Amino acid sequence: METIAVYWEEQIKVYGISDKFDLMLSTLTFDPSELEFWGQQIAALEAGIKRFEFIACHRGEEVISLHLLLDKGSAKTLDEAVNRLAATRSLHCRKTWPVDLIYLHGPHFQDRFGIADAAATSLARHNLTPLITGCAGTSMYLVFRGGEGDRAKKTLTRTFLTPMDRQRS
Image 1 (cartoon, rainbow, N blue to C red):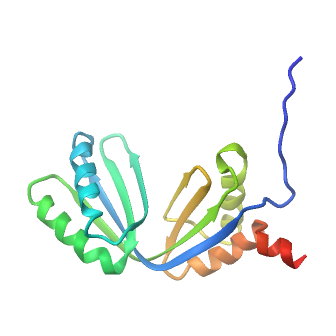
Image 2 (tube, rainbow, N blue to C red):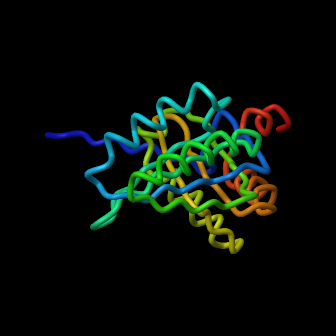
Image 3 (cartoon, rainbow, N blue to C red):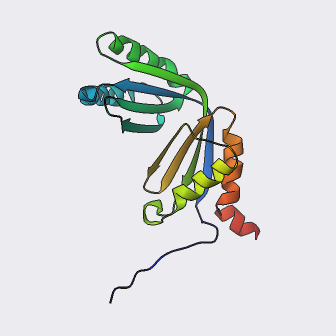
């Protein structure tokens, strides 16, 4: 006999919901054969850039898109490097500014089903569509057009239960 346990919460508990506004999203699109080269270039760039707030990569049928989220103060460093390197490589770069980042923190998102669905469903009900999303272990990242982040955070704050909510009740 096998026992299967299912964890369910009426309102999903998270450690917190944070935000960063007025960021820039750079999307580099290139041939899959160039992945190692561009990976090395981005790693080298980190020394001159304060930090990347979020990095995501996805592969289409014929291209790879690398999404880099950073503060606009670091954008010039990235632009200079990309422009210099793009002269010798096949690359398309699209910049979206401003964008807002909302991120949720654990616990153990990778072990709990339905968290991404709860966020997506709630956001869709409020006509909010992230430009890009990503999950890493105990965090979920959602990037929105500039000006939508505050509304998205309020929506997610009503969807998920944070320690601050538990202290008030």
